[in-house]
Length: 124
Image 1: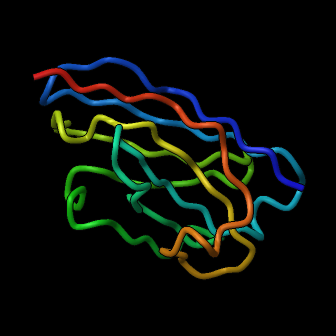
Image 2 (image 1 turned 90 degrees about the horizontal axis):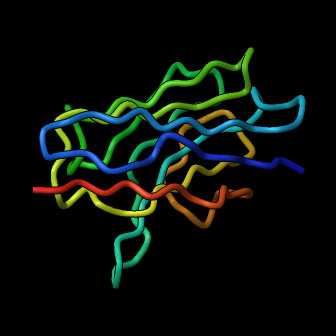
C-alpha cells in the first residue's frame, strides 16, 4: 500500500511559478513510476508528466512541455513538479499517482495509487 500526499498548490499570477511536491509512504518508492495528472472544472482528468522509477526517463504532455519539469528524490520518497510560465489554462486540481513498474506510465488506468490532489489557480 502506498499513500500519496500532494502539497505546494496555490494562487499565482500568469507567468509565475509553483513547485508541487508529492510525498509517498512506504519503503518501495523506487519500485514505482510516478506521474502527475490534472483536472479542471468540467473537464476530464488529463496527463501532465511522468517519470520512471529511478528517474532516468521523463515524458510530458505537449501543453506543458518546456514549462514543467518532473523530478524525484527516491531517498526522500518524493516526486516534484516544477511549473514555470504558468497560464490561466493550467488552473486545475493536480494529482500525483504511483504505478508499479520501472518505465514511464502515461495512461491513468495503469496507475495503482492516487493522492487527494492540490489546487492550482492561475490568475490572468
